[in-house]
Image (cartoon, rainbow, N blue to C red):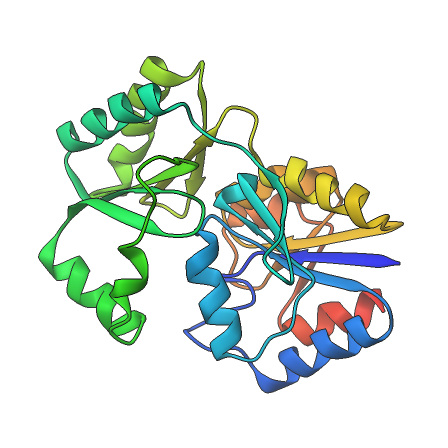
Amino acid sequence: MKLLASDYDGTLLRNRRIDKGDIEAIERFRVAGNLFGIVTGRPYGSIRNELRARKINYDFVISINGGYIVDHKGEIIHEDRIPLNISEQICEQILKEDLVLGGVNDGIFLRYLVMDYTLKMRIARYFRNRVYLHRKADPNIVRGFVMHVRDASNADTVAKRVMDNFGEHISCHRNADIIIDLAAKGVAKDNAVQIVADYFGAEEIYVIGDSFNDIEMIKRFNGFAISGANEKVKAVASKEFKQFIELVDYIS
């Protein structure tokens, strides 16, 4: 049994669309007895509703870069939490930073702490005004944080400042130029993919991505990059694909 774990934004979803042929290829892969799932920095609630709307079937979802993993029924395979006392301190740190967006999530939904009005309108349009999906986070469960800095040149500085204060308790993942994801200590996409593979008993593991938080996953599993990926991602990928269907055909 083969397992394919794909990043979502910028990899499967490109230019806000997924080709019909890619969706059909995924289903052929699954019908043949293999496993397909998404591995993303997003909370589960966000990616679940996207996949439902686009009618994409899956066997697992790795969300928050591995902090919250579920099967196709939404049953938890694995989870990691950030202690609430540490989470409260991180919230205070986020409010001090110059961000266009800062949020805390429970693994399923995101609660905004900072939201630039222009970005709020852009997100509303992107999600077709379904921003309400991000307003239900359980305040007693914290599995991750997200920060969008105003300038990519400042992202490393912000990330370092947070890790200097909380590195004992959290992991930090750069997700695109201006996005910083935080999760519990030890959480990472490559570890999460291995957890899923062990859970299902998959013999072959394939991964594909496009951004910074995919690099270690691609390196660990000799994985692939999608065309348009960050150059640092392409540098560690064993092969590059222009279309997702090409990848599925290659590993089938």
